[in-house]
Length: 497
Ligand SMILES: [Zn+2]
Ligand SMILES: [Zn+2]
Image 1 (tube, rainbow, N blue to C red):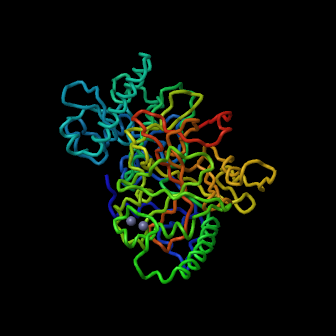
Image 2: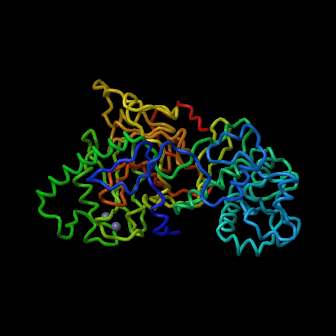
Image 3: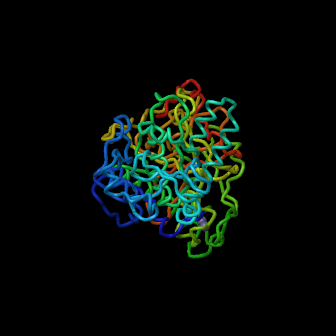
């Protein structure tokens, strides 16, 4: 699936604070707000009506940001908006949310409606669904394929039955309106909608462990959120890098000529692609002076030999921007386009919590997604209105056997990621605000790697530290997606909620 021009611009950075301009830099990809509010995705009419006229959902599910806390339910709502049985296809208030096997007649599917409790599910004609809900039908087929792979992996009959409920509805289960299953259905639907709005892959939430497992409760975003002061810091840092670039450019002669490429580029417009030059002049070394390694994608957009990556290796990616003169389909724009893979956020073990699982096969070198969250500066400079843990900055320890890059990386962990190339004083926290990548757990034998990426749509934009997640090995559908955080992670209990 390719993103349209329109959707491309849908992914903007959210800045909390007073809007400001900067004469040198473009602010086109920044949205300034007073506070971050988790809203329902655009459309979602029935869910919005339910939020006003509906009845409360169970208490424990009310606090998940961006998920409706009320549902349409019962005779009054049904009398008002009903007429379903005769004509299930008409009203905006009956927008299909999820499709299941298990209808009482052949050629029909059991359908859950957005904004309505599960007791108001109906059986709907399969042909109608395939035509009118093409996208959702495709999502259903992909989900069923995943469910079948998962079922084949577990020997336990009871567990198989639990997994089967992800695709097969029963009348008894429809009556269990306070089952957490329905909250996970909402997370799946609304988070996938947000992903679709910016051309990214769907997300499914599934839980096969006990009811005590904390539900994933966080504000879902597709791009970093930061305070105004963090953006100011990014602008200052960009100026510093730009100055070194200009000095080098002067030494190398005028830049009105096609680029003399020090290395090959897969760019659609190779003669003019500036990516390798940008790398050489800006981020050839990390913040501590350690040499970085530029990863250049192939024509398919895949990076090579990522399985050789070891902790402390500074791999970086530079993506095309407006200066390269290529289209948005250029293979050197992976992160800008965002992850296209179907992903599953799944819990099968209460102790481990929710983990990220491949919803389809992923090739080695392919982008899985971008790890996003709140960008933070040091605690001294940064207030913490959201209650997130603040940056764990500390002075370098000269007596440590580890170099400074490694010293910094030892602070990484679930929900917390440092940037050693772009800015060691900045960290990304994804506990309260984030996306599916926050569910990646540590493994001593990982299949994914985090890579700092210089990715700007517009060359004149300030550089914002960004972190891509690429597959370092082939990952099969149903496999957990894991990364190597640091050696001591083995002893750290990762509690993902
Ligand atoms: Zn390009
Ligand atoms: Zn380029």
